[in-house]
Image (tube, rainbow, N blue to C red):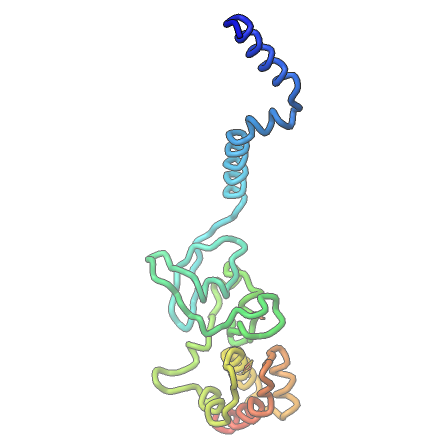
Length: 211
Ligand code: FES
Ligand code: FES
């Protein structure tokens, strides 16, 4: 093929290509850089939209300064939080099970009342006394509820146990001598899939006699 023809051919081919392709193909040709800058802009917008704050949480009698997003739950901070000095909080007694306020595995006490930590925002826990299952014992001395759970073998897999222990302790703080019915109502926010309820109720009765 002569050079001129080859050149024309090339030109025609390029023109045809540019005429022939749809806008979608053109978009696909230029998309990577456009998309990347678009993603960066979206990320920047998201970052700007995420509200962050430094809060002090009083957990088991100690202050923890943490930076949290508005959407961060108290449970996330307890289990996975890192304070502003770089120390992990690492209070993993409260369990992440349903993550929707149904099982009670994440129960902690807020100012003495049982609360699902998965349903509470960390920001809302400021200026409150947070007690986790780790905070119930006094050094090596277990809380009477913890002792009674051991005595009555009130657990099988143990996954629900920290939540039940905290709810039981909160119940006994409120009502030192609950009836069986009151115990059942007081612990109705906690679920045990292993079905250890009779042993748990016995443990709470025993603890109530000790406290
Ligand atoms: S994990 Fe919070 S209620 Fe189930
Ligand atoms: S002991 Fe297994 S879920 Fe309660």
